[in-house]
Image (cartoon, rainbow, N blue to C red):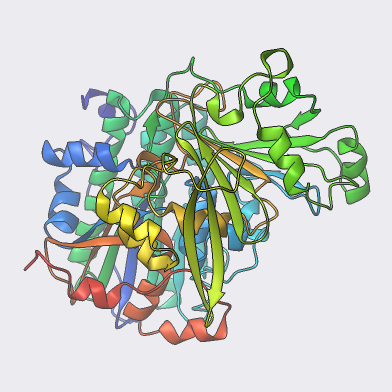
Length: 541
């Protein structure tokens, strides 16, 4: 299994890293080192840990720290959406990066971060303060990450990593992330400060997952390589005397599902059969007027943004600035006779769930197992949510409807039927279900005009795009649940915290650094600090 590592820049003969810090380099009282492994699937990680193939993660995080048993990504579970969520503590519906590609009905902009010339442009497309911007007086470093706004120093190996990426040496790209830590040491010697935040981003695992699938030997090799690079970095920090006061964080942005290349959901074709003129792909035009003219012939814009989620933007009665009415959306989604479009969208093979915005606080959801309404209200400044099961195309309750599978076990069914609950209650009660944390997150996702009017999520090994051996983006647990570990001073070893969100990482880091009050000077966020819960986590020593 590990043979290819020696061919493509693997870890078997990698030399130790050296951080030769000068004596006059100021070392912060507390510091954070983050390992962000893009596309590190929770299930595959667990398999390799059980087989003993990830000794560094096992020793440093599983045995040496606190694991979050049910860590939930932000909806939709797509790289750019979740990277910005991690760095801002906000859901995608609040920071506006709804995927690796998105369309904004207000500006008619279409953004795609999938090229060498655009992948860093995300830094200019959201307004919320990043972790780095909340710490402007700290020395902070982003290592190889595309989203780095506000970091004191962003280090990368653009040309060498670019060549590796071009030739498909994704394991080599991740190996360079570790090598760049020595450059961080050189910068620290120049500025006389070691960073209080160092984020190390490993993109290769995700790319191999897309090209080979997470069940492939190559994907497993990429995880073994990531483990080796994490070990090299931590060993160098140990040798330099930097680890003792450092909080280490290991996490990912989404799961990775192996896809059947032949199982592609033809949603755009489904819309076309219903008489809608559909635009897919970039919207040409350097200004609003040009983009408006380009879209004038169309009724809908569809955006995948990831293989397993599809956003459908529908033109309003007058133009794109207005949303379609609720009745128009319902009419489009309802089943037609076979001569005029056939089944409803949720009845297409491979569709797990269809969600339609019916107002600022109301989302209708449909699956093969029935329909429901998710609603939000605000009481005493706090959002509450409820799920009400409905008959198809009706407002009447339907006892048999269960689109999310929340009617088992009985305790969860009783919780749902009891009405309104806070966001964290929904997280705790549903984190271990097929659709974890779905009820609050689906309403928050649709707060953004970039979310679409209808969003469909894929099931099983299906996707909305061709050519992928693996993917993510659905609301299912296999896409939404992620690895999340914390290890460091004041934390028990080998302990477990039951449930948390990716957006909780930012306030947790701020509290560890003694800077939680920085949030009072920025806008509200969706995350909460886990630091007290981590310190008292059970099952460890």
